[in-house]
Structure formats: C-alpha cells, structure tokens
Image (tube, rainbow, N blue to C red):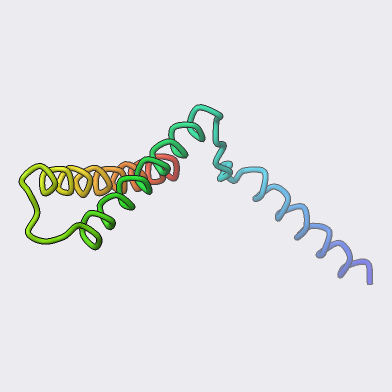
Length: 93
C-alpha cells in the first residue's frame, strides 16, 4: 500500500509543479478598457438603430440629405463593430 500512496503523492506533486509553471491565462479588464468598450458598444447600437430606422421608416424616394445621413450611420455602426472586434481581439492576444 505504501508504494501506491507514494506513487499518488509523487503524481500530485508533479501536477502541482506543472500548474505552477503554467502562464497566467486570466484576462484583467481595467476600468479604462471597460469605459472605452462600453462607449464604443453604446455608440454602435445607437448608429445601428438610426440606420435601421432610416432604412425602414423614411419614405422613398429619399432626399440627398437623408440618404447621406443613412450612409454615414451605416458606416459608423460598421466601424463600431470593427472596433469592438479589435478591442476583444487585442485583449485576448
């Protein structure tokens, strides 16, 4: 029985050493990152909502100003989505 218990003890010590040598994989989110991320997410949702409203609710044919506003909002939410993906990807890597 003592050989078995020594083997188990040795194996558990090896596991502890292996865990101690692992790099830390925890991602820490600073308050500044949270503020930037939530701001970008909020603005992306706002511009997406305006873009959807402009597409669905505005009568056709649209004036040049309304079409320009819709295009700018569509561009803004697409850039916001890209920024969100970039922020998440930058935190993971």
